[in-house]
Every structure is written in structure tokens, then in C-alpha cells.
Length: 229
Image (cartoon, rainbow, N blue to C red; front, side, top):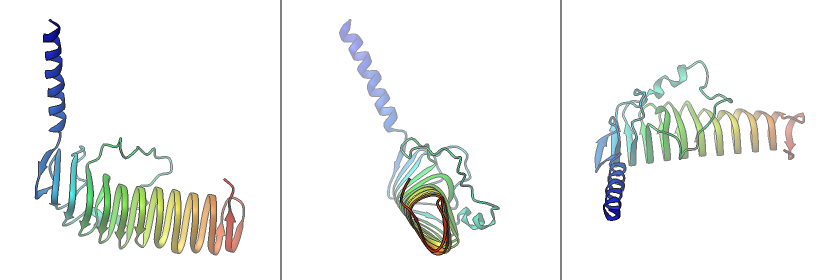
């Protein structure tokens, strides 16, 4: 009786493991990212992301090529979707539409609020992603909720970031690193260095260098600082 019970348990466990392993269908060397539960090794391609409301659970290991993305419309939005009251999930716990490990290239820019890129993401006009670990480059704007690495575009916005922001204007809710803005840097909580004509932080632990600098302690031209939390 005990042997039968053990056998039943082993069969049940094997079935569960086998089912979990089949969550994603493997594709090589190329496939479209317009499908659900897929792992693509090599090249994934498509026209635009962000149309489906359901989580498609697609992982690209290699290069993702988006011929036309919704980044074309990003400069038309009235304000940034980044909200200081947003609760951010851990990337490991986040249910993503797509995860790209490698290179993401979009003709106009990827707009996908539940997509994650680990590597390099390039959008001609603008990008909006949940998370980016690596380098994010656009011409007009880059908006990312969680950024670790480099943001490079005319206007950069991030909820929680670590690394380097370079642009005409940079904004963030919580940022650790260096912000270089030709015009301005505006952060609620900043740990690091702000360099620009106008720098503002409501909670600074670091250094500000610019024409006019504002933090929770004082307002000063040229150089301002605060090194106490």
C-alpha cells in the first residue's frame, strides 16, 4: 500500500514538473514575439508591442527587432506615466509581457509598461518600459520605472534608478548615481551628483553643480550640497 502511495506521489510530481517546463515553447533561430508562452533564442520580430492586455510570457534571448513601435506616439502624451505613489514590484516577482535578454531595437521605440530588457534597448523616438538593466537610448524620451545603467535621450524619466542619466532634462522619483542635464535635473530623492543649469532635489544626499541649485537645506548658485540623510 505504501509503495502504491509513493508511486502515485512520484507520478503526480513528475507531471507537475513536466507541465511547468512546458510553460514556454522553445523557438530557434527565429520567431515572432506576437504569441504567448514562448522562449525565442536568436531573433524575435514583430510590428509593435503593447497591444495585448494579457501577459504573453515571451522571453527573447538574442535580438528583438520591432519594425514599428508605439514610441512614435510617446512625445504626444500630456505627462509622464511615472507616479511617485506607484508601488514597484520586484523584477523577479513581476508578471511581464516580454523579457528581452540581449538587444532590443525598435524603429520608433518600444512602449510596453510590463516589459523588461536586460542589455541594450534602442528606440528611434521614445521608449517606455517597466525595467531596463543596461543601456537605454532614444532620441526624444526614455521613460522607465526601474533602471539600472545608462539612460541617454533628450528627456529621461525614471521612478527608481541607479547609474547615469544624460539628456537635456532628467527627472526621477528615487535616483542613485549621476544626472547630467543640459537644462535641468529634478528628483524627489537623490543620492549622488546632479550637474545641469538648474538642479532640484527635495531629499538630497550628495552634490549639485549648476547655475541654480535647490535642495532641502538651501538654495545656492554654482555649487550646493547636503551629505546628511
